[in-house]
Image (cartoon, rainbow, N blue to C red; front, top):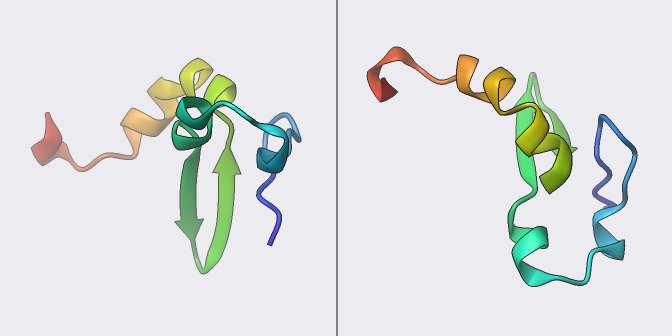
Length: 57
């Protein structure tokens, strides 16, 4: 299965830096898995934080 960023369309297979590959974010909603590349994940970190349960704060 090819992992593609749902925001910018970047393909994870093209990333050669191991740290960047590890920084990709996977999300599963209603059985559908989506990915955010490290760049989009960083740019949209507030969106991700908003999904965390309140006990993390």
